[in-house]
Length: 176
Image 1 (tube, helix red, strand yellow):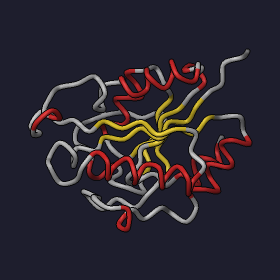
Image 2 (tube, helix red, strand yellow; image 1 turned 90 degrees about the vertical axis):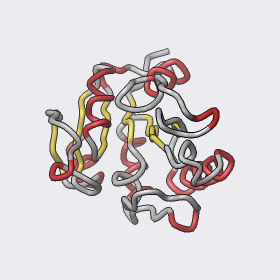
Image 3 (cartoon, helix red, strand yellow; image 1 turned 180 degrees about the vertical axis):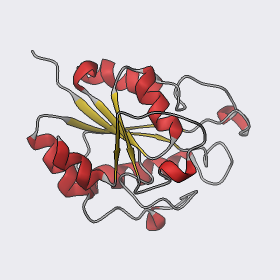
């Protein structure tokens, strides 16, 4: 069976409105165009997979169970093929306090998705709104897209050079 390419999507600022720490489903504001864009990705032969750092769990702001409920809701409302998350942070609490290989810019979540779905990484993309997203994609050999719909270029944590600078997920799916 032929490997499929994927578009890896950050959650906040890409699929949903960036609101800093979102700790309950009611505050998760999915962009009105997100489901349509994911449908377009599917029509163009891509898997649509969300990868997201969610350190609110490590910071004690919400439980992992609450996060899983939010993730299930996002998948149901948008048609994502999968969602992978990192609940860790090096300065977190309890079992979530650690340096891990799943927290972006590390590529652990991408590698797990590649294994689970047999993804063609050479034909895949990562779309995000932060430097850590872009570095994560570059660490996995993906084409990278920095979107302005979240933090964007004005609030990058450090210098990165994505392959594309675009306004939002609509513009990205239109260029594929």
